Image 1 (cartoon, rainbow, N blue to C red):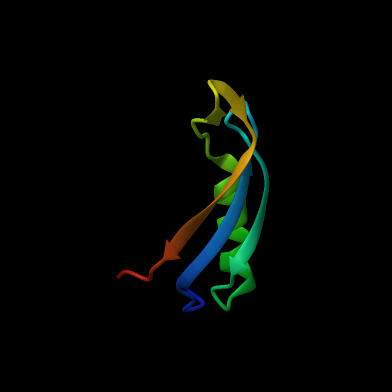
Image 2: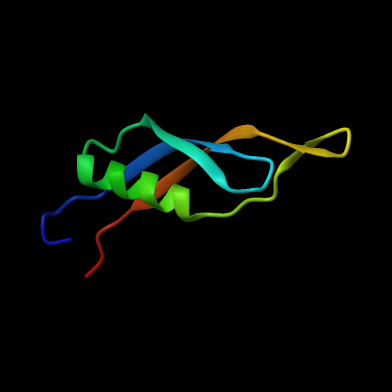
Length: 72
């Protein structure tokens, strides 16, 4: 907040069959490296319900937005 940075980072997350993120990378930058790094860190902390194919959990990828706004 002190630096006046706000924006939206779009992150592609690869989710393993266990529902844990395996990898995350920026698809669209917020324009601020610190916010993009925070989005990747936040993405890697999440847990997901794994995708299934014929009832078997499998690895997949998804895209998620991370919005960082300044508030007073």
